[in-house]
Length: 292
Image 1 (cartoon, rainbow, N blue to C red):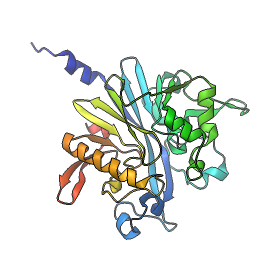
Image 2: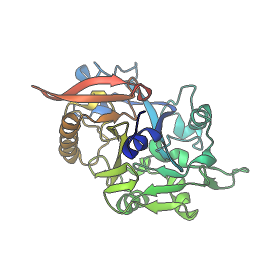
Image 3: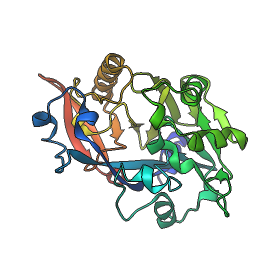
Image 4: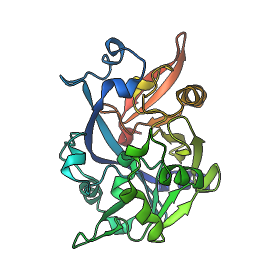
């Protein structure tokens, strides 16, 4: 007869799923900042317009009576004038990915938003039936941000203004669905948050205990495996030197503790691990979430 401890049962009760919401294109130089194209194009080749393809990959966490969606892509309520700049493509969407798993938007209990840039939170809000206003895409869910980032987003600086779209943000508060994460640490069982400020003020990075490992949803702290070398910092980051410090600390910890890193924007890889080398922390393995 085999006996299982409560801790072992708990670890295997949680389920996690990759939610693909589609793909878009961004300028390669903007995505890699001061790093020359001859270097970054080795991992992320660009097209004739210097554009690289990026995923908008979200994460679904099922644990007991909680069904937590981490980020939700660009959504579908923007007009063609806006969307033409980002070349949306792919045959998947937020809703189709949920449906393929047997879920509907009304099943989601919590929407955790790492930050409020349009490619991370655009799916939070949708048009109502007659397109006269907006409503919550996840009508039964609590939406999670934090006070510092919320203020940063609703009173945006000129550098980030184009990334914070009022129609993605204000309806969350007006609907009464908005909740704030008060501090770093555990928010849900086996789900804790790290606050980082280099990319944007108050970005939140989930750390989730899963199958005896720590899985980290890297968001824009580490968009892809191509961003692992320290100088590879996005031109979009508001405080690149802060990003350098935050990324170095995170990558060293990820190598030491063998974190599984879930990559939101990597067009080629869902997850990776990293390791210490003579050149610093570098890529170790890549794999899909369902291979864990």
